[in-house]
Length: 86
Image (tube, rainbow, N blue to C red; front, top):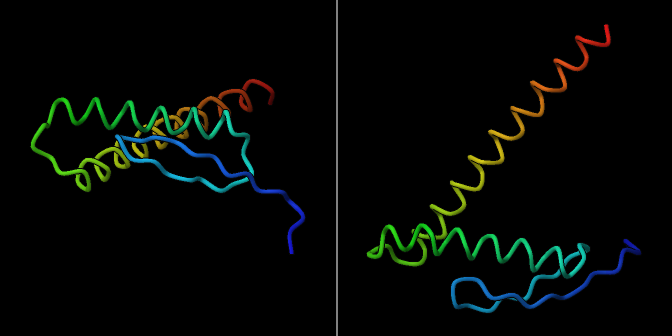
């Protein structure tokens, strides 16, 4: 059993309320939810005929794409830094 205390945070994403249970601070969870909401609204405004499920999948694809780009950039920067140290 884990002794880590979990916190419930209620967030609003694209007009729906969700209860997020986790170990992150509530303000962090709310910030993440607001970014998801913003991205969904951005994509939805450009594609008004998308249903919410497709909109959610496109939002997830966009988020993972951004994550992979940043991860690759970080790895390149770490490799450059290592090269400079050697």
